Image (cartoon, rainbow, N blue to C red; front, top):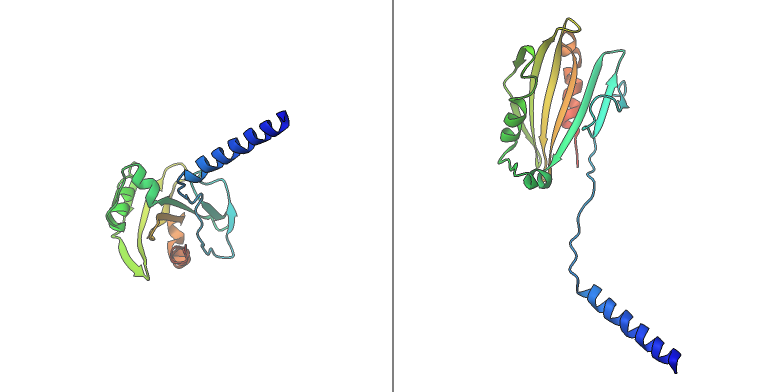
Amino acid sequence: MKTTVTSLFLMASLLMSTANFAQTTMKEYKAGHTFNISIPDYMGKTADLNSSAAIQYKNEVKDIYGIVIFDTKEELGLLDMNYTSISDFYEDFIKDFLKDEEKRTVSKSKLTKKGDMNFIESDASYFDKEINNSIYYFVGIVETKTAYYKVLSWSSLENKDKYKADFQKILYSIKE
């Protein structure tokens, strides 16, 4: 008899806890962010350029480097950073990019749309006193439905013309 009462009590408790669980509304969240990118076969992945980057690539022999940093629109919204366009995102980024560097130059940006993705590209350079050389940056921004990507590739300024086309291919290869 005591066993039957205990069993009934356990079954009733189990049913009540299941009923309470079933009433809880759940909201699904996506953890992590996946995207595809193509980099030239003469470059390899690395991990020592920028700790915020989702992917980093380089070729030390050719002295060229690159990183991709993404910000989801959801995360930016939680920080009250609601951009109305890719141009707003780009302007907010470029105003501080290399701003304290000697002989900083930034070209006029070029906006391109491919499918449902927006792209901005520009060139930036500065003189690095430590290495006594000018550094060239290819600055690319990508806007998708869910995120903004900063695609930064760089080399010495003297190699700009040699690698810029490949830097552009990297930018335009981004896909979610």
